Length: 281
Image 1 (spheres, helix red, strand yellow):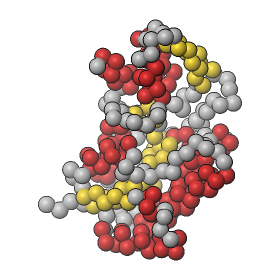
Image 2 (cartoon, rainbow, N blue to C red):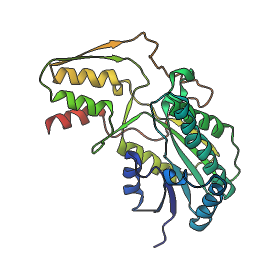
Image 3 (cartoon, rainbow, N blue to C red):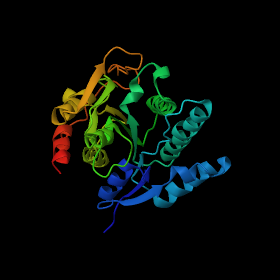
């Protein structure tokens, strides 16, 4: 039985691994390692991509790869720009030149923060790529950009806030910590993201470009999650700092991509229910 082909970047990441495991049941997955790709000589990179796409003739390219670093020095900024903007731009251009049916890009909803000084270099470079995509034009390739909140789930080994909370939960001595309140810090379960991307592969889009900022109920916010943790673990207390230079608020009317709820989809996994289940194990 013939399976449509998908070229997937970022397949070794947490989201990429989960997505690949689901999509391989219906599609043939070709993994493109951006780490290896970045080491190819600059004058050979475009030809490498062109050959890869012509050989596989993919139905779609899903671009998850990100050069991630929270360092703020110039070297880090340059490396982020090279991978997250220059190479990503090259991948998209080659996709369009070969008339691939659709290009699906996974970004962060932090990108819509207007003040670039508040963004880490990796987010500034991803935002730069988003601006490019917004201005781009393609007659045959459909562009679907998904801007996600914090992705969480089982077997996630990244040093994320939920993992941190589970660690301090095991410490019985009293713990007090401060968090910067932000409506931007929302959570989405990895299976929900996988389903959203899967829908992007089968949905018949009428327009050429779509920008979706995936954002859900307020009770998915960081402050609500920590409040529940504190109720269940009396030794954990916290203080929310509302007014701070580090308070990162998203402007939903951002010029890059206005807020738009992903059509016909509601999250299936409630963060708080997931936490309750984890605590009971």
